[in-house]
Length: 403
Length: 227
Ligand SMILES: Nc1ncnc2c1ncn2[C@@H]1O[C@H](COP(=O)(O)OP(=O)(O)OP(=O)(O)O)[C@@H](O)[C@H]1O
Ligand SMILES: [Mg+2]
Image (cartoon, rainbow over all chains, first blue to last red; front, side, top):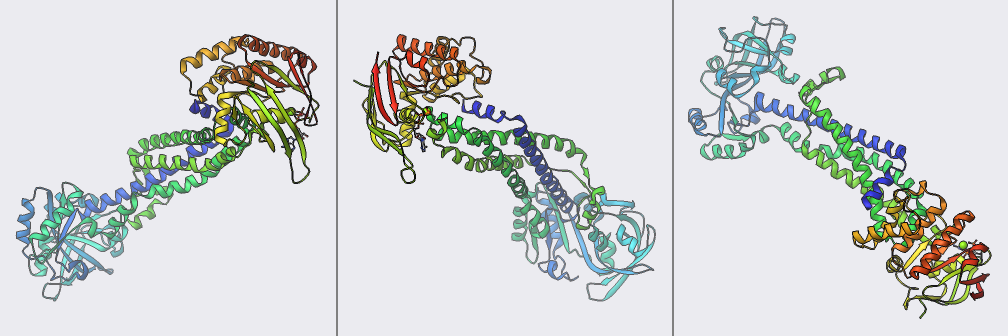
């Protein structure tokens, strides 16, 4: 009955309640959408980083990641390879020779990271080959093929089929260089990455280095959650190397995964704070115009707890009705956009690529986001109604029933 | 034994600024089954007296006893509960919950009393029918005339099975026909079910219907006549 009285009281002023409801619907819809977009960006970035390059776990010489010297390669790599092959949790792995060096075209030169990859294994382990926009992957018929980022190619003013020269220190610290033919161009979501990395075949690079060494082994697991267990296994088994999970490898991944989940709370807090004033105002108006009626209820014997509860309930029902509408609308919007994605190019989405984020975003709303939102909405409705509800309690039935 | 006793009731409003003596040493007794009106000029203290008896206001001096229970000095929460279960109220206006139908308004008070659903339904229907509102169960207050609204209010007051009903100028907003009709209904309930009514009024024709007339002047009892 309290529920019914609350619900009907809300509709005493359809226009007033309606406006507030619309505001709540719009606010929550926008909040969910913004958070879903951000989630989508984060998720895509996560998937991009993991699947294109970082993978779930990597093995290096203990100092390679900080020093990056050519001689800091992985010893006993064959033993490690067969160990990895025996572990069922590891879907695939790929070893890489990594050297910092220079790329030269007839026009200019640039500093790059040269990545010597095992072509078949790399294809099986990462999705990097999907970033190819022109030409062929490294397994073409060419001698010394190389893949360049589109941006780097533009900068060097070269195209597929042209030759470039790669210069770097070999394992004996001698400067060495080799001529490579551009077999293809790639574009990832990250512009800086495209400018600083070139891909060659492991064997071609090792020939120039002087030995068949690898600096990095990357592996994809059955599940990203296995990475800690797998790396600690490897670390226990081998010395002079260190295996690390994606969480340890990438500060960016660490940051976005740590922050991502709580994002909705901040976005909703801001929106609900604004809505709280609307709710407060509506509830105050509702109380003031009902003073006599509330006084009558107290006079005939409705206790103050019930009156208080009734007003709180009114606020919660009103707000939850709006919230239900907002969430439903957001859900429908996301059902539609989740598959199509939102192309942010026209809204300056291109500049997102500078930071490594795709221009087309597939928004993601987690079911937890909806739950969090509903919880926050109820809290807001209660907080906003406390003052009006106390106002109603301070009523003196004697004053109110006097004509 | 009297169901209501007021012991030397006094009420002074604004004692610190311009004191208003709304009640002066009022001692009265009301018996079960009375049909009593309180009359007197405007400002003579009728509403103040009824509010004291109804536990809506606190006397400056003296106290009120209902059926042997001293209500003066009760805690707020106790008092609300006491009102709910012992006193029926009919006000001059704003009696009903506007979003509820006549039927719901009458049931509501029994719901507050946590009565059985079946009892609620039976009693609400019975009382509304007795009040001549059998066709108005589902009407909201706005769809009812002033007289009909007051009859719903009487039904609501009766629904809680109170010891007595207090009605402060229940007919003040009604035309003569409606006022007399309301009085008919109240009188019927008084005769048939021995319900005690205490009501205030200015209206001579209403006064004529009462069996006991208490006249107040300037906060004091001027006359107390029984027919
Ligand atoms: N809250 C209050 N503060 C100050 N004075 C008050 C208050 N309530 C009532 N009074 C005064 O107390 C006196 C008695 O008022 P009361 O309302 O009981 O009279 P009444 O007989 O019901 O009058 P009416 O016929 O106009 O309803 C009046 O002088 C009134 O002005
Ligand atoms: Mg009065």
